[in-house]
Amino acid sequence: MAELLFETYGVPSVAFGVDAAFSYKYNQQYGICNKDGLAICPGFSTTHVIPFVEGEPVYRGSCRTNIGGYHITDYLKQLLSLKHPQHMTKLTWEKVEDLKMEHCYIAPDYFSEAQLFQKGTKEAEHKTRCWQLPWVPPPTEEPPSEEEIARKAAIKERQGQRLREMAEAKRSSRINELENQIHGLEFLLQQLEQVEENDIAAFLSDTGYVSRQEIESTLVKLTQSLRKAKGERKVEQAELEKTDASMNEKYPLIHIPDNMLSLEQLKEKRRQIFLKTTTEGRQRAKQKRVEEELEQEKKNQEEEERRLENPELYVEQMRAKYKELSEKIDQRKRLKTNGNHTNGNNTSGGVGRGERLNAAQRERMRLLTTAAFDRGKGEDTFGAKDEDWQLYKLMSRDNDDDDEEMDENEAELARISARLQEVDPTFVPKQESGPTQSAAEIPRVRPLTKEDFQIVLGVERFRCPEILFRPNWVGIDQVGLDEMTGVSIRRLPTKDEDLEQRLTSSILMTGGCCLFPGMSERLEAGIRMIRPCGAPIKVVRALDPVLDAWRGASVYATKLQFPQQTFSRMDYYEKGENWLRRYQLQYTL
Image (tube, rainbow, N blue to C red):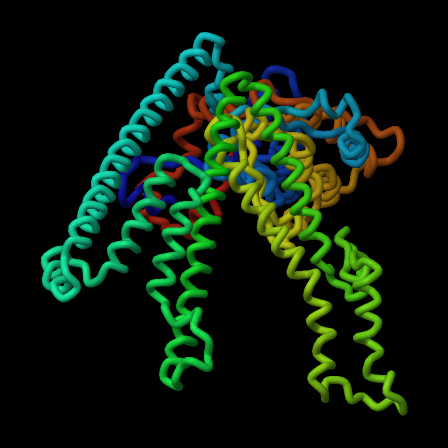
């Protein structure tokens, strides 16, 4: 430091001193401490204890520990970061330093104080401090008023009416288009009756059709489409007879006996029978599908009428039906899940296969498991014959029925869910989860509240300053603040009990860490534990533990003998830094 001050900045002279000594001498002027005493200074990075005899410091008896306010702040920052990892960016060094000086205190008995917080007493709640971080509450959605609900219902009704009008217009256009096509085909058939048999191919070449059967088949399809567009459900008998007649004309060999046909005609007859059966099957399936669509459309219209009559009752009924189907599907899934054990006694609450089979199924299971040993001699030959595999078919029959019923329930549940999402904005569909997914694996998200933006200081208030008395908590294997006084007294050159009593009867605390509440009481109790019984002990705090060291140095610098006790730049260049190392400052205030 001398080299930097003299050679770089060119200062004329320098005087070095100890902050604890300056503070002790300054407070001695005001009668806070005696000429004989101890100065305890827990500073920023170190803690010193300096004995004073006849007003002068005895540095041979001083004691130092490498712990101070820096370590307390760092320890508090670590504890709060572990406790609130989501707010690590808010826990800056400066803010933690402010929290330390504002909320930390020294506990008279650490373990008794910790038990209060462990038990959660009211006293512990009273001592807990909370730092509220900036938080803006989310806007609360007020329930819509009756006027708003009526307005939205009117808008939705107008939209529905407009959609119905558009659908009706589209349906009318489709009906007109189909009717025009049917009239055209009927007119074409009428013209075709007037054409001779030899001129039919030439007549149809310009129309795009090949034969009369193709025209009649197209006419039947258009008629069915027209009937579907009009919403007709019953098929007239005349049209069915007409369709049968066209089918008979298209497959003429079907009704002819086999003994009247040649080998080629028999092959053609089998082909016509196959084609007719396939065509009829497709027509029946299509007709069934049309009828199902018409039935579903009728149900939708009835549901819409019920909704318009009483919307609240309709939504309540739909929710009840949704809940019933959902529980039914979940129960079937649980029944099919055997858990982690093959005997059905699983720990997840599910029911195993053996517990859900009825009497007939259990009997078939018994036959299946014992079939290998029913043939005698205990020889396992099951599966060698084809009839053995009929048991598997019997076992899977009921399972297939269950799967079909489950698919129907899931389809109905999906329809009700979609309908509820349309008519009820507050409806939230149930999230599907796999059979092996537990409730703990389902992510749960809750809105952030005011408590989520709070830094709570409980045991940290007295746990962090406690390292002044227990440095080993932060990995520093040295004595605490109270034991340092005993070490300093033992280091004095002379052993005088009277002097020791005078030293302990005037102990001055200085430094920033002395501002913690409870410091003087805890230090006095700790020193009393290491001193003889009845020894006088008095611990006082400096007038201003932070600035008294500066004030004492300023008073010292105003004295007339101060220039003679400084180390000048000339001394530095002439005597060198070795002389500076032997230089000792005399405190005369």
